[in-house]
Image 1 (cartoon, rainbow, N blue to C red):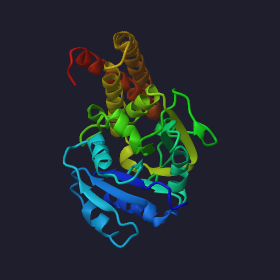
Image 2: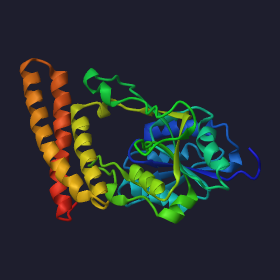
Image 3: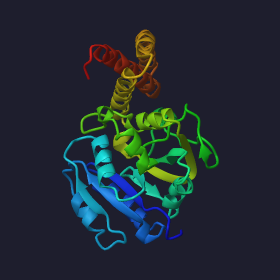
Amino acid sequence: MAAASPKVTVAIPTYNRADFLRQTLAGLVAQEFPRDHFEVLVIDNNSTDHTATVVAEFAAAQPAPRYLREEKQGLDYARNRAIAEARGEIIVFGDDDILMKPDWLAQMTVPLIADAATRKIGAVGGEVIPIFPDGLPHWIREWHAPLAFRADLGPIPAKHSPMGANLAFPTWVFAQLGPFHTALDRAAGNYFSGGDSEMIRRARAAGFEVWFAPAAAVQHQMPASRTTFRYASRHAFDSARSRVIDRAGQPGATGYFVSRLAGNLLKAFGFGSLALISTIGFQPGAAKQALVRAWRSCGYLYQIPRSILGKM
């Protein structure tokens, strides 16, 4: 890369996943990218484990990760802290449990570096491939697959939104559009999501393209704790809630609420009945699938009245 290339900030928000974080930082140390052209920020969002110790293990790395403590609880508070602290002209956000190849950072940033003068690209998402070190139960398999939006580098249509686990923005996007929406935060005790897709939607509304970089793939580690019925059902419930909260401020929200309320009443009843039938028929996997879908509908039914009344 030429000396004039922009500097890149890699931001890793983290919460109580020190051992996974160690693997992610090891992958960043191995990046085939000019050492003086990127920095690594670790934003510790009130971890109670040995996160700080793990970051200190990489003090001799080039570049050494910069440790930041963000006490406002929530993923998007941590992301916004990274935006405030970043020294780079491009910010690449990664989860604290991703594994990457040595060319990952180069593949993620090439489109934005090439677009620096024209400023047509507002975000670039990389491929996210889930892996399951503890195994994957059959009943949950259909909900975990690579994004596969396209086979080559380029823009993707509005129906697709890259995942926040592997997502890059030029810093001027935040200067123009503002920071992440913290009402959609994932924090300790909930599985809210949507801050990344809401930012993507803002970028598109401002006329910017969103690109997908399949070669900038990461493996997203999904331990046994994320393949349980309890996790899947709570994630489904909170994901539905966050979609309603996100939609509340958009045009046409009333019509959306009415259709979702009616539709999910039927879905909750239908999937609940299917779960009962599957249980009676000694099909526990099918019963779990149906209950997770029913619980997602319950998330809509819970949040829609609260959003109409102006409550979280």
